[in-house]
Length: 357
Ligand code: GGG
Image 1 (cartoon, rainbow, N blue to C red):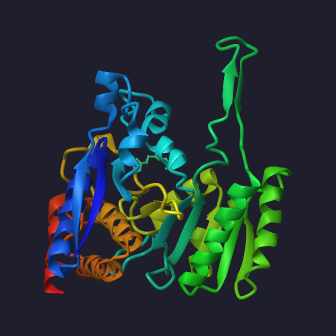
Image 2 (spheres, protein in one colour; image 1 turned 90 degrees about the vertical axis):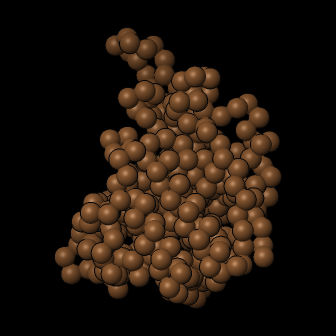
């Protein structure tokens, strides 16, 4: 039996609802397989903490989290109480950057039985993965505002692409393509308009691609790729893009997966020298927080990716099959997927499927 120490940060809004259920499913899977046990340390780092103590995390947060191989994260943000740029830069983005979680892996797969939003495109057509650069690009955090409130006010937000950062994410995408038995990689930029940063990205892709002659390389402008998600999702295998472009595209990915409640997100430090972080793609959705109707499947799927990362491949495969059997049956789904079940009932259905298996 393998033991893993996991840091759990439910965060805000429905993050709390879905993480509770995600933990329930991961524990049930550990019991069913007998292959692992997760020892959780819970952290109440969220907007309430910010309001009462002035920060989302304590000063020594890096030292506290560093011993954990993985962080199981819910969601951040409560815009009625704290502006979103304060909460995102107070909790999630510092972890991605400080722990060098440079590869953000986001599968876009329509699970069996679910109604996608695209006419004529089912589970066979919607099955690819997005690799998002996760530490620089449009999220570099470099910029400033001057002459506030005056007619000559200036706001600058710098896009930063480094050779090291670009090469490593592109290489990660090609390696993932090989690992998953794919035949191609789709690189996304806006190099007709962004003649410096995006053309640089294209150049790096061309260089790295020579190391992978077995894989085809396709290049798309981000606007064309947005259309392609809808018109030809079956032509996509491993989509690699910058921080902001991939963030936007993967919300579209959530939509074609049936609901924003479905997609998971693995923020990986491939060196494993610092913790990796696993979360649903969706945010905190304050409007439905605490109502018991949030879809827990994106979080359960993120937990499944965490188990794969930890090396529990058989358990992870079993959990994927259990989720698929729940979606295939289609009887226990939350309202975002057209069902009437609660968050807890969906997680219970996954647990039952695990026990049946
Ligand atoms: N569960 C993830 C979460 O809370 N996401 C909030 C969000 O807006 N993230 C922005 C990003 O991933 O770039």
